[in-house]
Amino acid sequence: MIRTLLLSALVAGALSCGVPSYPPGMSRMYGGEEARPNSWPWQVSLQYSSNGQWYHTCGGSLIANNWVLTAAHCISSSRTYRVVLGQHNLYTAESGSLAVSVSKTVVHQDWNSDQVSKGNDIALLKLANPVSLTDKIQLACLPPAGTILPNKYPCYVTGWGNLQRRPLPLPLPFYNSGLPQGDSGGPLNCQAADGRWEVHGIGSLTSVLGCNYYYMPSIFTRVSNYNDWINSVIANN
Image (cartoon, rainbow, N blue to C red):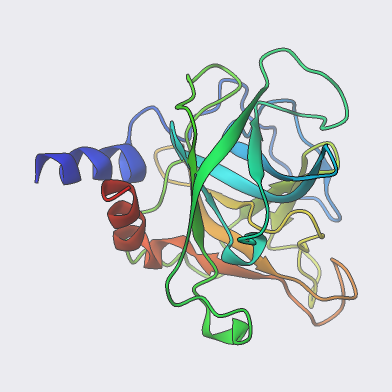
């Protein structure tokens, strides 16, 4: 019981989560803009190994010092993964960044890649070593279980190019901020009333025609529907 309470405090509401050392400058944008470096410090790059090289495949969110939240469709049992934390530009060596091997992947038991419309596009990655939190590497907050935000609540998608910030909703009708390839698994960040940022969504699906495409909004896994599953996986692994 005590362990469960401690996990819940860490994963769902720790006071240290969701408050970047370098706050993002907020504005309404269309098509994305480069984010302030390290202003979304829970954002990670999920990378896989191939022929001795590492390749970015998806985003993710650091929710505990040894657990990353991402999308189930990002994970293949045949691949070896690592996550890169504290990085702004994936193609430049940066002080304070860190690459950590993934020791275990846990995909939601009801995820079915042949029945994407049924949802459950969520996975957890256990890191081989816990990471130390810094001004560039921090934890994401998760929303309280069952939370549903009101219509038109402003939220931001983050991912690479050089870690771009993309807002939801947009001021134009029939558009979505889009979820470009490579940004799947990354966070949909929404600011709570107390100022902390919470990850309300996990990038799940976008049109094959690309982001910002007419009448084809991106789809996100609603994180608040999976708090119990997240806590259970962490407690039992």
